[in-house]
Image (tube, rainbow, N blue to C red; front, side, top):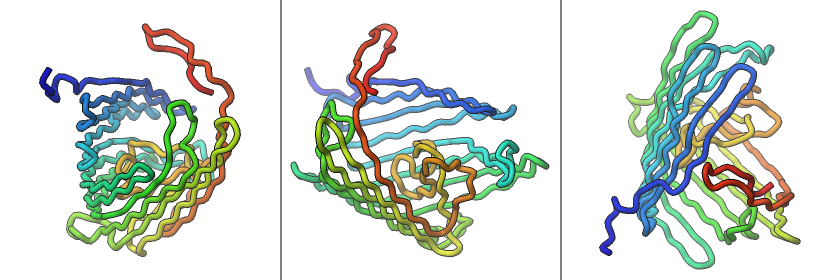
Length: 286
């Protein structure tokens, strides 16, 4: 029958989100969908976070049209602890952002390349726990970049096949000076190389570099995962937070320049694929 977007633009998958530590709890739901031709793709991830009596309703959402246009937004709550006391919170901040990127993909069977340009708006509200003093900052970031990779992806592989990939982003905080509390330019380079061997095993090496002006927004390292709920989590534009296993986000690893490298061995433990259809609960890969 005739193709109509609204007839097939329904959710095709979902997953629950639960994060917890000694003082906070986060509950959420991630939903994704697209039309039958794959022109329209969307994700929606509402979440609720409670920390020491502070309630925050946020999450992330994104929409992409035919790999030509990406629009995303997110809202998150983060807590920073005192440097000499990891049990005592120093301040908490809520971060809201909107990002818009235009793409020009150049794809071949052996590789893919993407030129992109766009802008991001971020507003951060910081509240000190000791005296409840609030402060607010906001930035408008414009930028452009290039990404490339020649990875092969196989449905049952745990990691992309042998190949290389990189992303180079150039950013400015000076396009709309009256709207930004930070100034200057920044450059971020991210790269990854995979080497597959044996039975579905892969060595993964990464190298990430960043540099910015003295009055720019600093980079920060820490945490176990790179989430979608922070600025640049989906589009990478304006991204200043990078994970670093073994260090918390409160470790004080921040500055106007950074370098991060890693080498990992990815290997399967078991392929289980057993569970229930209704409700959809079970185990897949370990």
